[in-house]
Length: 462
Image (cartoon, rainbow, N blue to C red; front, side, top):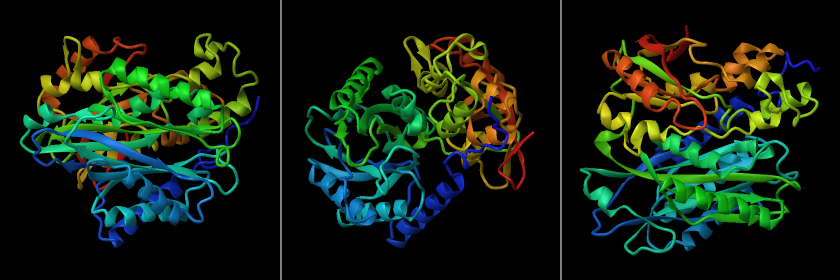
């Protein structure tokens, strides 16, 4: 058995420090162009009062051999804008490469300059560090232009009735990818559910999704992944927006694939969850998951290479499942808990105004995600081990991964959090456990995991 005591996310190939540097420089770069930065992953746009209104995505991906990342950003955005059939209202971009460095900033700056010429704000994007996916010197990405149309077509979503009921309607979008989870499983539900949770965290119900699939595998395999996303969108009752499916043998190492996408929803501004009303004494509810979801796979695979000889053999640590099966577990959606399903009312309508803040626990673990919605002068004081730790994470720790590194990288059994008033917390916890805990293929138990206290540091473990 290998020794993993010194392994970290960074030593396995992903640097949170570099990612934070890139995010900071992207914000500075867009600010230098006079562009307001709405968010890192996504943002919101006001919707004009059309009689009939449809929303769609026009997209284009990076072409291999672009002379520089900045020109690649400009050219990709230009191609995306040329496909627009309506009024462009927002831009999101995605960039993936083995390293997080100035190339990311240059790409986004190129996208931003072209967007500025088209008088369209960049409202969000994502950059992914993916080792062992791209050929030397190569990178990939796409640009999605959100557009409003007055006529419906094959890949547009009718939002007329939704926005007419709203005082100040906002269109919300978020872009993300599944990272190196594609080295284990290529399930489009991972990115669909990830996107659902991202905008759900703002109180926004997903209505439409556009997927990006690229790689150096047979074109048939890429098409099959896209077909699965088509089926998923139909089953989930959301509109499938125009997909981008690209066979890219010049960019990707043979056998490699990337899956990313953009999710859309609409909300009345007064219902947007922002965290601004969080106060001392509020309770943090955690909703449990038993999977890695879509984050931390570079570290998980590195540990697996050291510990597991046969990734397809039955393991007692995982109840007879193999290591590969354990890592293949789907991202866990929270949409039904938030918005309801069938004859079940979701907590946002059953307890209006009670959910003051949320967190979708993705990259950076509980700390980096929970503290995003904590106002200055307050601190989220969170207790570890209230909810069950997933078997794979227990296995890592028992075999030498430091507890601190595990909490920095993985969700550690908490997939989503809700910050609510203390007087409502027990009722909401009981409602979730009674109606949603066992509703899906995995358990999603709810429990109090923390509390809001005064403090200058926005997050601490108890």
